[in-house]
Image 1 (cartoon, rainbow, N blue to C red):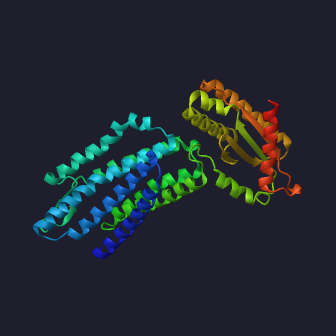
Image 2 (image 1 turned 90 degrees about the horizontal axis):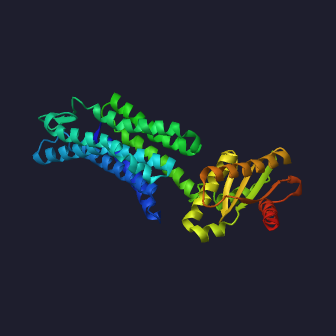
Image 3 (image 1 turned 180 degrees about the vertical axis):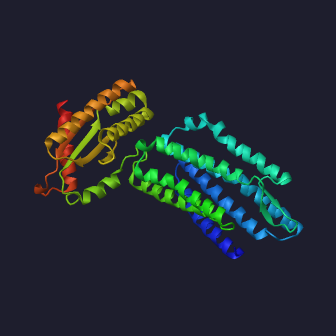
Length: 372
C-alpha cells in the first residue's frame, strides 16, 4: 500500500481517538474506575496507531538510525496489542458488574496472556518468532506470528462469553455497544490478514471506541449516575410529549423510600446510597426494560408503563410490594425497603399535561404517606 495512504488512515484514527480522549479527560470531574479504564483503552489505541505509522515510515530505510527506530516501533506495536484487549476485558466486566474487587480477584489469570506476549515479543528480537527484518530493513511476519492475534483475540472471546452470560442484566444499547468491541476489530483483522498491508485492525478499534463513547455520553446525559435509571432531565423530556407518546393507556407510579432520612442518619450516607441502588434494582426487576423508570430526585422514583385498566395498575403495585418484601428477606439488610406509593392511570380526556399528571400522582403518594 502507498505509504502516504497508510499513514493517512492511521492519522485519521489517531485524531478521532485523541479528540475523544481530550474531551473525556477535560470533562471528567471524578476519576471513576470505568473512566480510567476507558482512558487507558484510548491511550493504548493511540500508541499502537503511532507505532504502526512509524513502522510504515521506517520500513525499508536501510540506515542504522532507521533500523533501530523500526525495531523499537515494531517491538512496542507487538507489546501493546494484547494490553489494549486486556483493558477492554476489564472495562466491559466492570460496566457489567461494577465491582472493583472482582477485577482484583482474577487479575493474575487475565494478565498471563500479556506476560506471555511480552516474553515472546522480546524473544523475537533474537529468533524471529513474531517478526524479523531482512538485509534491506524490511519488516516480515515471523514463523509464529499468528500467536499474537490468538493471544489478543482470546480476550475478545472472553468478553463475548461474559456478555452472553450477562445478557439479561444489561440494556440492549450497552450490549450492542460492547459487541462492537468484538465485531469491528475482528472484521479489520480478517481484512488485514487477507490483504496484507491494510491498517484496519485499529481503525476498527477506533470505530468501536467511538460507538461506545457516544453511548457513554448519552448515558451520562440522560441517566442518573448513582442508580443507572433515567434522570430528571430525561423524565422532563418524556413528560413534554407525554399525552401524544402512545395510544395505549399509560399508568404512572411515584414512590419514595419510607424513613430514608433515618437510614442516612443511623447508618451513614453510603448506606443511604446503597438503599437507592437496591431500590433501582428492585424497580428494574419488577417492571423490566419496557417501562420508563426514572429517579425523580432524592429518594423519589417514577415508573411509567402501559396498562389496559386499573386492575393492571393494582397488580403492578402489589407485585412491587411483594418483591420488596422478598428482597428484604433475602438481603437481610439492617433496614427495610418500604415505599409510599401514589399511582393512577393517565386519562387523555382530562387534557392533563405530563407534569400535571406527575403532580397528581405525587399528591396521591403524600396522601398515603400522611395516612401511614
